[in-house]
Amino acid sequence: MYKEFFGLKEKPFNVTSDPSFLYLSRVHKEAFSHLLYGIRERKGFLEITGEVGAGKTTLCRALLNQLDVNTKSAFIFNSTLPEMQLFEAILEDYGVIIGRRNKVAMLKQLNNFLIEELSKNNNVILIIDEAQNLKLSILEEIRMLSNLETDKQKLFQIILVGQPELKAKLESPSLKQLRQRIAVRFHITPLEKDEVAGYIDHRLTVAGSSGQIRFDPDAVDFIYKYTGGIPRIINMVCDKALLAAYVMETRDVRLSMVERSVQELEGLVTV
Image (tube, rainbow, N blue to C red; front, top):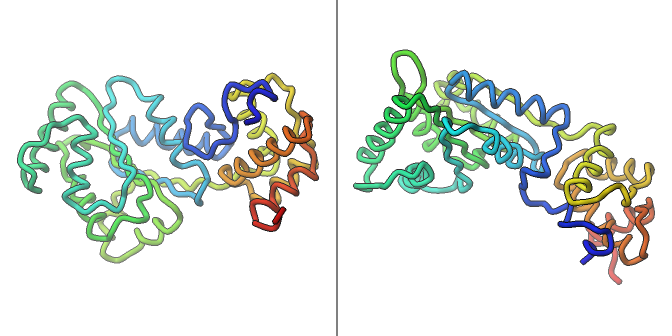
C-alpha cells in the first residue's frame, strides 16, 4: 500500500523469516559463528534458543544459504509430527525416496544415505525448528539418531532450535544422555538499544530505500522501550508507523506516529 509512495521494491517490515533481511547484530553474528563452527567441525548436536521473534528461524535460513554444495540439509518446521511422520519428513527433505514405511526400514535408509554422503566427503545437517514442542520420547529418538556414526566422526549434525522452554525440557532427567551430547549451545538475546536504529535502517535499505525514510531518534527510542529489542515486534511497530507516515504524506516517522501505532497494536484505538 505504501511501497510506491516511499519508492520501495518490497515491504521492509514483514514478519516472515526472509534471510535476505537478516540483520547481524552482535549476538546474531556470534550465533551464526557458533552454528558454522558446530557444522564444520562435525560436533553432532547443537542447540540454539531465543525468545519468540528473536530471529532464530531467519538465522537458520540464512545459514542454509551460506552452506556449500558439500553440505546436505533438511529443515523440519513442524515439530509436533508423530515419530513415524517425523522420520518420513526428514528423509523426504533429504530427497530420499522412501521404500517401506516402518521405523526399522526408514532408519536403515537414513543410515545408508548418510554413509553414501560421507563417502562423497559431504556433510549432512538436520535443523528442527520449534524444538521445544517435541515430546520427550521424540527427543530421545532423535538422540538415538546420533548413534549413526563412524569410529571417527558423526555422520550428521542435528541442530535443535527453540524457545527458552527447550532449555528447560532438556534438563529433564530422562534426557540426560541427549544433554551430554550437545556440544554447541547458544542463546539469542534481543537487540541492544544502540542496535535498533541500525536494524531499522538495514531493513529499509534491503527493501530499496536510499535514505529518504527517516525514523526520528525519539521514535526509535520509544520503539526499543516498547519492543525490548525483539525483531518481530519491531517489525510490527515499524510497519504500522510507515503506514501512518504514508497517510500523512511524510517520509519522516515521528514519535507521535509510533505511539499511535503501538496503541493500535494493543487494541487501544477504536476509530
